[in-house]
Image (cartoon, rainbow, N blue to C red; front, side):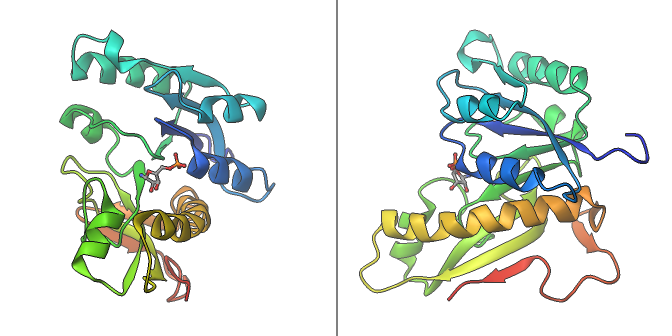
Length: 218
Ligand code: GRF
């Protein structure tokens, strides 16, 4: 990456891509410290592809069912990322597990948004999990990606209240609003070099406010 150039970001999606859209919108600001250079999906029908293309962003659909193995899909994706000179990868509703080799190749340069306050409620159906557990706060987390699912070092979190009468859809909607605020902030921290991964810890550079990386919406 040239010293003066913004990091080139690929966003990987599998579906509607509302978090992708929030990243694209944020990156339109001239002072945003990252450029969205590629949107790729493992499902050709992913709704977010059309939105990205409509914003002039190169898109790729790599249908994972067309590849004989996880490694073959990951190699094809890696070739696209290299060809597009990608510096950072954002997973945004990307519903596919990577081979360990792919994750290691992007160590410290690949982040994900997960709809819970990790380390609580990993995996899928996080809002059902939260309601079942009876927590009063729920939320979302942006973290570095490591081989173990939803276990990577945490960059930023946003919390929302669980209200009486909430069902999974109501909770998901309340959290999605915060996801759309949090992910652009977290990517800016990473792309701007203000946080970095050091072993298994996230290191914040000097001068960040204590609240950077934490959002609370009550
Ligand atoms: C979001 O809730 C995200 O946290 C999770 O998958 C969902 C994707 O939604 N990983 P969208 O495609 O960004 O609208």
